[in-house]
Image (cartoon, rainbow, N blue to C red):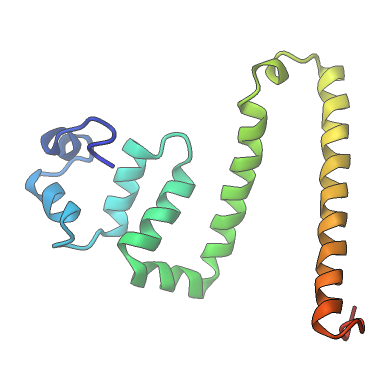
Length: 144
């Protein structure tokens, strides 16, 4: 991550306000575990476009015990919802023409988007029911 961003160990240490930049090397080599505080500091440097997603992913891989505790508390579902909303917003943000729409044009596109989303969800439900039918030998599953 650090090398991909073009940062030296010293530069990253300074960016996340570490008194001893050699800790960056220890973190990279897995000799010490990442605290949640360090994960948040790293998110400020590397996760600017999607800090919640960055924190979520890094916590899951760098501190599995902490991630399990958060999951057990139900935090994972809240974080996942936030990440999904962010991904949805990025669809809009990635389109320069969409940002230039008038209010009326935006409302029209938003209506199309909502209809398309509802159609996709209905298709997903039909697929789920077909799959469920195959698993139960063509009989509807209980409660379906």
